[in-house]
Amino acid sequence: MHKTTATVLAAAAIGGVRGRGVLAWDDNELRGTLGLRAGSARHARTIRHLVAELANIESAPNPTVLREMLDEYLRHAPDGTYDVLAGEESPRFAQKLDPHTVRRVMELLRRTHDVICVDTGNNVESANWRTVLQMCDQLVITTVPREDAAFTADWMIDLLYDTGLGDLAANAVTLLSCPTPNPSRCSVTWPSTSPPGPGRSPWCRTTGRSRPARRSTTRRSRRPPGGPGCRPPR
Image (cartoon, rainbow, N blue to C red):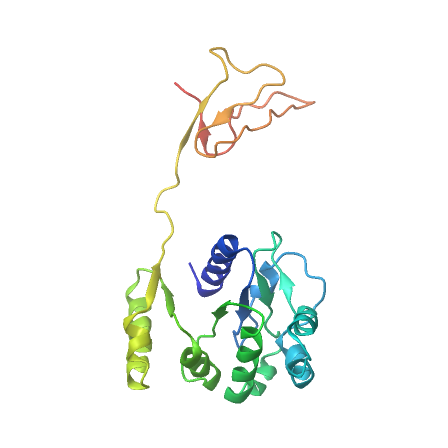
């Protein structure tokens, strides 16, 4: 599980419980993909467009107008559980996200959302990266069970201690993930004791879904019923 995937899942899980007030911010400095995972977008605006109108949005007369103005720069998850502030595709824009601008954006988002999940970049020496961590309440570290990945995470934690963020590192949550070593097998059962006839579909125990029966106009398929990865009972 990588940073962007963890950010999406965290925002979706928290948003599913809270119902609203959750935002995922793609703060990756080099073409983040979080905005592409928010489903169909109504527009192509990113953090760059928001920063260009930041002063105007900050001066909104009341919370209702502020939410309406900010909504023009956000994308929404298909189920509406969380909002997304997409990152900019051009790497040149990263120079404009200085600590002062990052703080202004964060304070603006806090005025309309209760929980903000930030997908950061990988450059721990970036002023943007350090500013986000200075403002966050909970650090989530994503990694995989490899020696090089463990060293990278260890170096980052050492940096946090060296820069006065030791408490944040000590209370960090680590998401450790790895691919399944062997693909899972599933068995096929039939609705009755007889093999499936026309219009009947096998039931896969692994997926819990009924697979539609396939028909061929040329010749009968010799592939075992149940689809790829499933074996009929012996």
